[in-house]
Structure formats: C-alpha cells, structure tokens
Amino acid sequence: MLPAYLWTMKIDILTVLPELLESPLSHSILKRARDKGLLEIGVHHLRKWAVNEYGQVDDYQYGGGAGMVMMPEPLANAIESLSETTRYDEIIFMTPDGEKFQQKTANQLSLKNNLLIICGHYKGIDERIRQQYVTREISIGDYVLSGGELPAAILVDAIGRLIPGVLNDETSALFDSFQDNLLAPPVYTRPADFRGARVPGILLSGDPKKIDEWRHEESLKRTRERRPDLNAND
Ligand code: ADE
Image 1 (cartoon, rainbow, N blue to C red):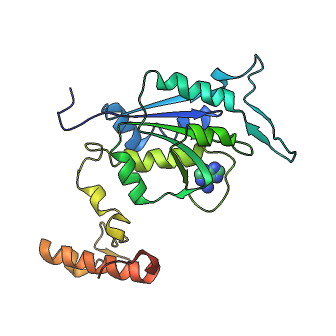
Image 2 (cartoon, rainbow, N blue to C red; image 1 turned 90 degrees about the horizontal axis):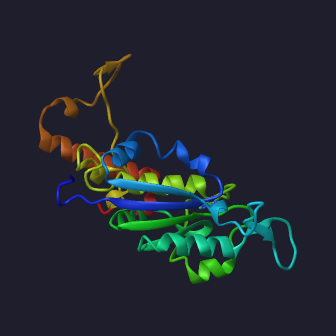
C-alpha cells in the first residue's frame, strides 16, 4: 500500500508506433516510478480503432498537397473509448505549433491525476480533433520531428520524475536546472584532484551554509552567462 500522501498518476498515450515508446518508458527513473506503483503508463495502438480491416488511420488531405493526415474517426473513437474508464485532466497533443514545453509545464502536469497524450504523425491530425477533444498542445522545441512519440517520451520523463516519492531524495528535483529560473551549479565527485584540476575548496570545507551560498552564486553566474533570458532574480 502506498502512504496516504502518495498517489498514482496515470498517463495514457495514443500512437501508431508503440515500439518507439517502449524503451524510453521502461528504464531508469520511469521504471522505478512504475515499479513503485506511482506512475501507470498505458500505450495504446491507434490501429485498434482503424476505419477498416487494413488498419487505416490516415488519409489524403483535402485541398491537395503532400503528406497524409490522421483521420478524425479513429482518434475520436479511441479518445471516447479510453475516456469511458478514465476521466482525463488534460488531453495533450504533441505538435511543433503548440506551447513550448518548459519546466513549469512539467511542474503543473505532475500535479494532475490522469493525462492522455496523442502522438501525431505524417502531416498531423485532423483539425476537428484538436478543436473538439484536445485541451493542451505542446511542442518540445522549434524543430520538426517525424512523429510525436519522442516528444511524448520527453514529456513523460520530465513529469514522471516530479511525482512525489519517485526520486529517492525527495528534495533533489527542487534543485534541478530551471526550477526558480536558475541553471544548476557545477557538480564534482572523486577524485579531489583530477590530473591537476582541483575541486573548489569550499565543497571540501564541510560547512553546509557556505556550500549552499557558493552553489547559489554559481547558479546565478551560470544563468547570467548562458541564459540571460531566464531572468534569474539576483
Ligand atoms: N512532433 C513533431 N515535432 C514535434 C515537436 N517539436 N514537438 C512536439 N511534437 C512534435
């Protein structure tokens, strides 16, 4: 039994390429989250809701032009069928013209109970599905990938590690880069002297207050130098 303050988050993913999602969702921290029962992931093959026995889920676009479009019927049937057993807080479509994915998006989504993620392919999905079912459209950056599966895996990874109880040291996600609009400070491990390059002495001082101050200063410095657009509050 999970302690009372822990809950299971459920993420369903609709895709025409489930194989692409298998590995990224089955290792490391996501594996641990699933094994601990904190995260349940359902990968659903859209072809289950295909319009014919050939497994058709896409068709030519009206008005002409290269590239197929994912048909509304299989998507609507899939969403409606999955919604019979799960009340989704968000139905997310991964698309390069969506809002840009950021740490704060991951923070918000990690507080939800049930998410449905739709992976697009080809030219995209019929606009009517976006209008009638999708509640949030997310891009992982200004470049075009061949499908929404890798973006979906990135989204699930970023969200999954924030679910309470997933990381061993519960506080460690708080110090990730981008929390508080700051990049993370540099980190070191043994040896203290690597081919003449020494670990900053303060980290060996054993003084937690001084170490915290040093880390904060380094974060500010790194953010100012590398990402002045983040507006680190100095
Ligand atoms: N599908 C294709 N490219 C994408 C991107 N950059 N973000 C989200 N989904 C996508």
